[in-house]
Length: 215
Length: 101
Image 1 (cartoon, one colour):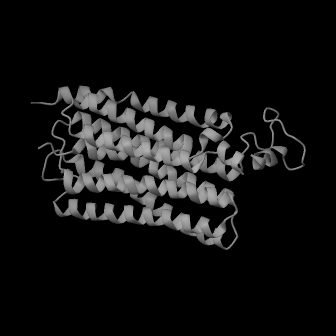
Image 2: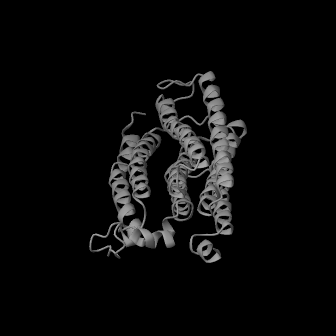
Image 3: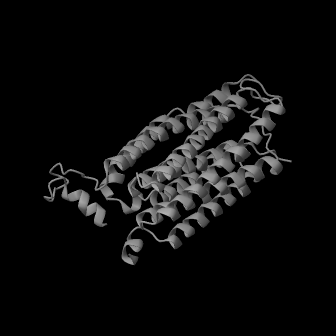
């Protein structure tokens, strides 16, 4: 709270009214607001892809349902668990950074990165498995040819986000450990990480649950 | 320190949110094995996902603890764009019924 007041007081120490064009009308730093704006635009990108997927999915009676309970659904559920848990470790990192605990912040960020890496590795094995079963972008052994394009585009863009997030967190952890970054930078990285988690909350039910093989 | 932790969410709050997110994921997997019509299924799953997204935004992404003006600036634009995209969705049903049998 104290930091909000400090930002609100503005550059010259005079209290600035938000409605009077105060220095920080949202009482946050500009980096945080910038990340929020990026997240909004990225959310619209994913929304467009998910909407296109739903459209094709509803319009295709022959949509493939290749995902067995084991391994596909178990893997996807474990991946959801890993991503959700990595969000919690990121929250812990943000809390630790605000409490000026540099070592523990770096450890929590490393735990988050580990979660992200595990997610990418499990996801990659799944991709390899599906490609091995003959799924291509516009061709698969089961039915609607667009299945591959929809699956690989959605999960691929998400996996790229996770991978970039791991690199981003690595940079933040290194520099925060050296004292070059402020707790706000950790929080901004956290915002991105939670957003990647959030997107998976839509991909999991739409891509996996709607393509479960019904015995 | 404890007053600040209360104002910005405690570890306990985050763990409760984490538990609910996992529980809702479990519900989704359970629903996956119910033979429901696709339209109904899609609606329920999207509803659950929106609840999960709201939990993540409010607690993990801290929006609940920011100034209300921030949410009021960010969220309506996103909601309007997504609702506008949704206008196309019913067309997929038309396509489904127009398919040659």
